[in-house]
Length: 259
Image (tube, rainbow, N blue to C red; front, side, top):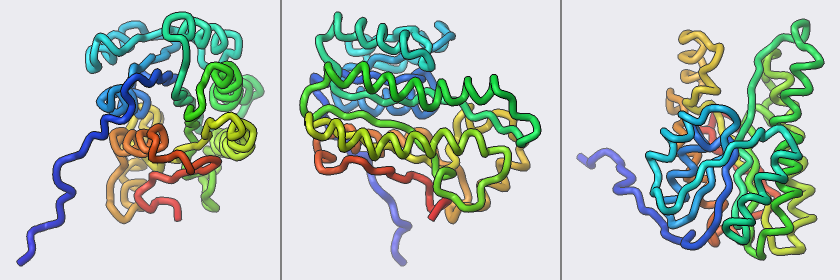
């Protein structure tokens, strides 16, 4: 009998030596997994966090101390994103890769939505990433990478009603990805988005009873959630030189949850 399939040892491509990477929402979940993966490829990684200094310190402890920095800034504020970019440029001179990962996922039925929730969700999920890209792009060399984060839900025809607000923000992110790719492509900068399916993060689990999580798991052919490390591998490809002809794309990483 044949042995069960195995992917074998994970290969780490050290192709990001000397690259300066900014990750918003970088202290946990997909952001931290991406930081660890890109750092393993030789990049210098700046973790942006909004509030918790202790979470930032914990995240830094998992990364090389000589190539990692944590900077506080509100990822929903264009002013603070511009200041964050200024601080990075003042220290490193350029930014090569931006992963606009910070986000929020309120799950509310239509009758419970408020204007305040709408504004806060769009500020963090759409306005912040857009103005971060605007601030960073002038300081990015040819070969730069801007990576947004969408979701498989943005393309699903069977979205549960409480996801309406969240899904709409990610639809906006996907269109920004396509349009900005044509804009910044003239300067040799690619713009793409990774669109995870259900992924085992604090953000995903927040507000969901265990029975709901089990039901979501059962809807995938693999009968499980994705892991942040699996999404980070997709980010690593988009960030690498191997993706030089990939731009304006929404790259699904969802275990066939959304096909």
